[in-house]
Image (cartoon, helix red, strand yellow):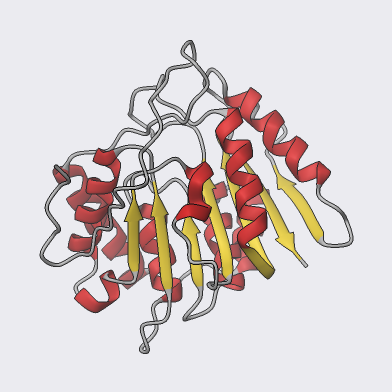
Length: 263
């Protein structure tokens, strides 16, 4: 029986979209799950986010990039700054690995508009991650109508075309690969389904849109996944795509940000 719908947040569950099986690095090649955190940890993240939004202005693109170059800013901060330069109110975006909802919340703030046209499609293979994201958004967003702009699905990210409406031009597809910090390091995204997800993202992305991939390489299988992502990025035609990579060369296991812009 599917979980009950939260009274203040719309949790979409399609009976026709059956999640793929979980795997560890030694098991057959399927979409890997991502561990969620507790409600107490979610509350702590909400409190931290509240401090950041009320006391600190959002990072601009230049400040984020310069901060990254000087080692003072994280790749995630650069990613969010880039997203803000691309995404507009009322846009449709996809969080392909919503995990505990941090990126989902950031994207919701970018697309939420008074007319209610903005949409965030959040995807994760784990039911528990979807529930965690839902709970996190309930605590972080007071406006019920704004929360309803987020649609959550417990499916593999390679199947995003099954849930994003064909008539909805997508401005951004965001990936945060690997495992969640503090989680089970054997529960990871995997190269094959990530490659399929990137192919799907390239098909649904509108002109002027962006695919953002944050790759964590400090765990088993991370470099294999990076190889797949780089191969995909390199294969895109230069007349219709611009591909770039931000990497700390003297920090061999630091996360790598790859950005693919569709012209």
